[in-house]
Length: 627
Image (cartoon, rainbow, N blue to C red):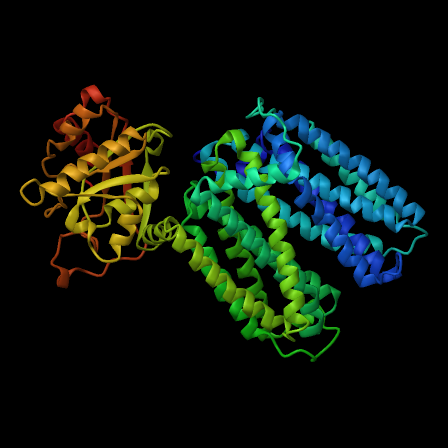
């Protein structure tokens, strides 16, 4: 799979049945929810004196309520039991729920239909922790970003199709809504049949005792999230996106009708643009991240959400203009394409924002309680979505804001939240700067990336061609790399933020500063003892002539004290670039954007065979004549 795109997963039994199972589930939820909403509005159904608007809001609350109440409980089940069997049982439950829905439509019983809606929320509550917990078990590490991207795309496309299909089926003039019932039953049965092909995914924590106290288990799930600061802020980042996305998605129908004067067709077209953007952004994540979990895309996504959210406000006309505008007539006006582009780009940058965060949570959460972390995430998502509805009601009601002004406030809030998160966890911003460097100034071709072990202590030894070498190597290798670097380079403004955040280790010669040297060796031992990756440049300085200088014996000292394998790395085609020393600073030639360089990674050298001379030979052989 390493040389194939994410779409190759569609040909894999370990992925395709699960993808179809979850997509059909999302499709069915939205057929029923939107069909029921349409019937409530068009038939003016009433219950116990409640008006239509109250019943619609009650139905939304009933769907979300199980996420608050039961996520913690079913997160335990997802970790304790084998997942494919749980998925089949959940899909069988969906068939039963849709039989109840059929009975509810036939009897025209609003209480029964609202109960069905709550049961669908319960089913989604059960499935959520399994959904994101199973992906790391059925996918390889390098498929995790692509797999999450496909799942997100499938989910949002299903939401769009269900949003369109539900009202259309409900609008068919028949004695009772049997077209809605037939569609929901058919989709539920298809989902169950797909679930029969989902591969086995073993229980990750079979010995845990199920805690039936929903409150204490919810608190424990949130504590699991809090164990890792990066995971905690990733969870908060995803929940914030659901806050942001809910405001935009929920307001699209009113925005289309009241601000743009559009018809139902225009509303569907704008929703489609938003979903197309999310799908495109999600699918691009694998390409932009080089098939690794690249959290540098998260700040990129946050910036885009704010920029295009603000532009949507600026591009929106004043309310009260035309009415009944169709999608075709709307697009016939050139100025309206700016609104369409804003919606597409908001969705696209949302994909950049969320896919790496989901993959990061899966990667950095212990397998034994991964599903319980996802359960905690679902609880927070539900809370943030409710908060978004409350904020929208306050601003659009008592405060008298227009919908474009609500978009503006949300976009500005997004910038505030992003700054807060990236201040708490500067790793996001550090990876963003590294990602920008290696995707604008350079085009990096990697050979031999499989030689970097997925776990365990290892040293990466490279030739030293430019000031950007640590950023290039650190941006490509999937695991965090702790670089040993000359202390004067470590202190370079701007780059110092990246080096410091990346836990680089400044070093000096004994004659320059013995304290820095001793501190460096202590940190080196800590890194290797912790089973992490250490990056070194054995030449001790950036080359001044493009040739590999003699490797210093410091590596021999490190290996004698901490015997670990060493991976030789050769940087090629960097000599003469902006950050190399080929020309004086004032005479350096302008570099080409996106110039091609290579990172060649050799097979690990066993600790007993490591010497400075052997490593120099290996790096020189890898580089060849390509400076």
